Amino acid sequence: METISNIFHNDPLPPLGARANQSIKLRKFIISPYDSRYRTWETFLLVLVVYSAWICPFELAYLRNLSWKVSLVDNIIDSFFAIDIILTFFLAYLDQKSYLLVDDPKRIVARLEKDIRLNYYWIRCTKLISVTLFAVHCSGCFNYLIADRYPNPARTWIGAAIPNYRSQNLWRDTIHAASQFAARNQLPGHIKDEMLSHICLRYKTEGLKQKETLDSLPKGIRSSIACNLFLPVIEKVYLFHGVSFTCMIQLVTEMEAEYYPPREVVILQNEAPRDVYILVSGAVEERVEIDGTEKVQEVLCNGEIFGEIGVICSIPQPCAFHTIKVSQLLRLNTAVLKNIIKENSDDRRVILNNLSQKMNQDHRFSTEVMEKSLQMMHQHFGEYNRCSALNQDNEKNELKANNGHSMALEWKRVTIHMYSQRNKRPEAPLAKVINLPGSLDKLFAIACQKFNNYRLTKLVNPEFAEIDDITVIRDGDHLFFMEI
Image (cartoon, rainbow, N blue to C red; front, side, top):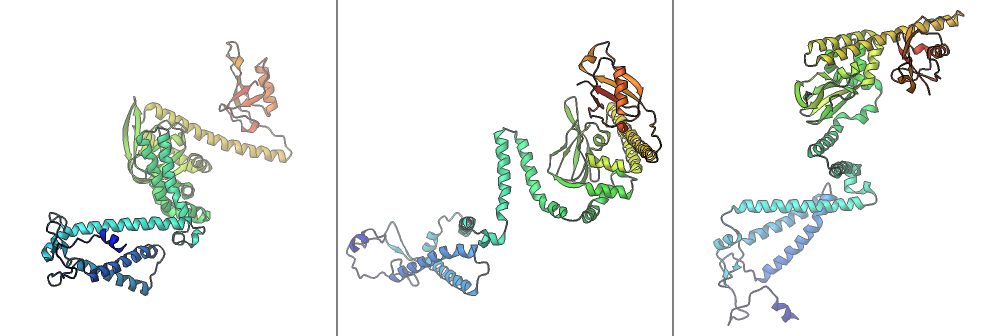
């Protein structure tokens, strides 16, 4: 068996006539690769390599603060490897052509350098970095696999460092789901990029907004934080020039900060008004589509408001707004803004006056848009006044009823219509102007007299909202009776 193993040995065969005990003469300080002591040294280094490959991943993954004993052992092992590197430059090698041992130091160093045209130092550094990165990556993946499969995550190295590390996978899953959605529905590339950029920005800004932390605070503290952050920005907005400090506080408290990535569509043209936006930082451009061509009209800067015309005037948004770069916006809901304006009558006049002056001075909008906006604005302004007067009249009437006096409603003129499939006939009555009676029963009776041969069952306003109380009807309203 020993003879068979020697056949497959890598050692070269001795030349003919050589004796077994013939010694090899080399230069001083040159080591023969066939020396028994060098073979023992190689075996010893092999043990150290196996030990290092086994202990290094555990030190990296589990041992946060290494003791001085472990560090001492590692340094001793590293010193042995350093000695082996030095011995490499004094190790003779076998020439493949002459089959003789080369003991010239210059030729030994030249042999170690694979290609003399390249800088051997940087080649070794590149190899070292590559191997190190690969080894660290493999070790990290292996140790993460162990920690992820362990039944108790809190007792693993990653669970101790990041208690909720499993929730971090939501980022990867969200990106993967968005990419799959775009591929499955064959969305264009720019839409897919907008989706991914919005998701990335949302995850990046979650730490800045701290929405969960703010929501857990009392309303007074949230108001103080909002005033400290955004009140200077709100004071620069033209729409709120001259309003009371109380109204400012109400507006700032209801606003929400949002971040938008570049080339993000904030408001579409002819979109139903939903929110008002104030630009805190970044840049937003205003676009208008004319004859199928989209044109940039203006670039908004910090402290400017947009979307207010559609919201206050209750008309479709006349312009589109796109972000140019990463922008921070304050968003205010339409219903919230209208409620605040409705509750503050003096501030309402100031806000509507500011908007009216802005539209009169701005020549970007067409005459049709301006006339419609001003008409709707004044209509809502009068509507709020009538609502206030009606509430005062109702309070007076209730006071009289409590005192035992008869309640008499002020006469109001209304226009009644018949809404039926049969009113398409030319002879069918279309509208009648009457004085509003004191109850719905009397109103139905008058309507039955005006519209003969109709069975009136329901009363609605122009928005098809059912009316079940006579006090909500205002002077000049149009009422529609339905036959069901």
